[in-house]
Amino acid sequence: MPFVRISLPKKFSEKTKDAISVSVHSALIDTFNIPMDDYFHVIEELETEHIKYPETYLGISHSQDIVYVQIIAGAGRTLEQKRKLYHEIASRISDLTEVTKNNVIIVLMENDGAQNWSFGNGEIQEPKHLRKQ
Image: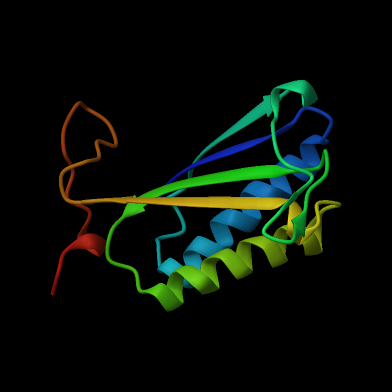
């Protein structure tokens, strides 16, 4: 049940924006085991001057092709799953678009999936795939 916000420069084509979104979603399916129809993304296009970043941070260079991926997900994934997710997102984006791995910034925020989501009707749903066994 991740919610994904992708913030990027307006200059990217629709094809590139779609490829970025699909890359994130497919990585979440493969590493966080989410259902295929659990696809809630917002793509936020920004003017270049509204995207702030350092040219280099922690030895990693960045350019005007920088893409921010913010993921809000229910807690419970392992450190290894998170490492794999970040790797898969950056790799898939760089394989399908002109955005290089160094320009993919990912932030994962976790919450208690049982009570911090409403997928409609103003109600808290209890998706079966989230129930603890």
